[in-house]
Length: 217
Image 1: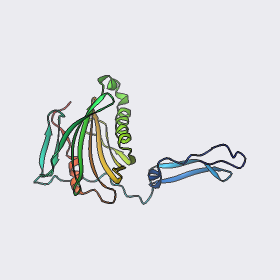
Image 2 (image 1 turned 45 degrees about the vertical axis):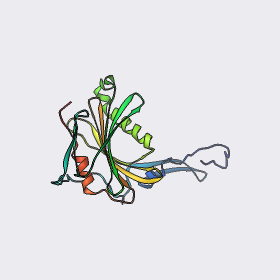
Image 3 (image 1 turned 135 degrees about the vertical axis):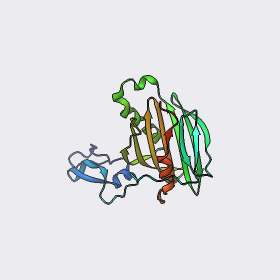
Image 4 (image 1 turned 90 degrees about the vertical axis):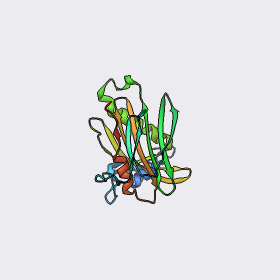
C-alpha cells in the first residue's frame, strides 16, 4: 500500500495480489498521484514473449494404451498401460466429489473428477458459463492455485475450457493443465500435473483430449 505526501495516512493503492499473474501479463496503463500508483490496467492476454502451453494439436493415442471406464461417472479416458487410478469421494460443501487419481514422481499426476450440482442451478441456460467458471474457481480455491491462462474449449454442445494453473503443493511448485466442462448439471474436470520446471509431455495432452462420455446425458 502507498500514500501521498498530501495524505500520508490515506491508502490509495494495493498491489495486485497475484504476482505470478502480473509477471505474465502486459501492463497497459498506470495512473499515479504524487509518484504513487493508484490504478493499473493489465492486458487480459499473456504478455508478448509468453509461450502458451494451451491449444496443442490433437495428439494420437499410443497403440499400447488402455481404456479406463467409469460406469458410475459415465466417462472413459485413454491411459498408459501401467497407470492405475485410486478412487475416492470427498464432500465439498453440499456436493460429493468423485475422484480418480494417479500419481508418480516420474510421470506426474493424472486425475479425473466429477460432481453433480443441484438440478435447479442449471434451469436457466444463460447461467451455464458462470456456473462452469465458479465451479472451476472452487477447485482453485481449494488448492490455492493461480490461473495463468485459459481458453474456451467446448465439448460437443457443452461449454468448457482449458487452462494452465500454478500452485504450491506440499511446498513444491507445480503446474496443472486442466480441461473442464459442464454437461447438464454434472461438472467434469480432467487434470494433469507436473513440476513447474518441466514441460507437459505429449502423452498428457493425449490423456486430456481422450475424455469422452459413455452415453449422452
